[in-house]
Length: 72
Picture: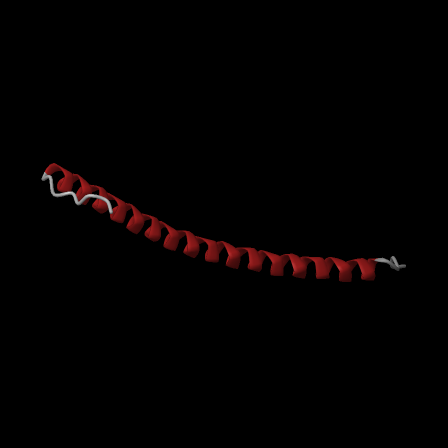
């Protein structure tokens, strides 16, 4: 004689497994999107650092040559 709850438990277990698979796929997609965002963020940070260094170099060179304009 079969357990009357066994079929119901098997259906519920199958639904849980399917939902976990879908959640896993969503997490993998989210991880991929986060990696892309962080990569673009790194490029922006690098460009910002280059710009700041360039600005400091210009200021230093103008001050050393005595050609730094006075503030308004």
